[in-house]
Amino acid sequence: MIGLDTNVLIRIFTRDDPDQLVAARRLFNSLTPQQPGWVGIANLLEIEWVLRSVYSHNRAGIASIFDDLLALGNVVVEQHETVTIALKRFRNGKASFADCLIAASAQNAGCAKVMTFDEIAACGAGMELLQT
Image (cartoon, rainbow, N blue to C red; front, side, top):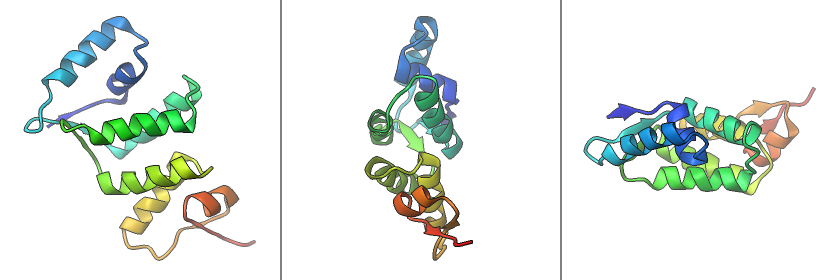
């Protein structure tokens, strides 16, 4: 398995640097189900932030990119099922991807609930609002 840094993935998704895109595509083309690339949770959080804040992608565009990444046969995404749950919440709500991932990760860890002061996270990410 070969770990993939966020900047390699961003080149693939944005095609913003022609030279780095060629190298990133060459690496991606060398990946196989037997020798896959690995994408961690931290990568996903960085990717979402970069696509949203630097490239002005909307949540539908980001969700589509993540759908494509999760479907690749030559890439392993850490906690694939948890990410899939978080992505569904992100796509269908207003909560941030990070909040959706926190809630899905806690659920996967066996937490009965996730407490938050964030009303949007309580509504869209599956958390419970902590009253003051």
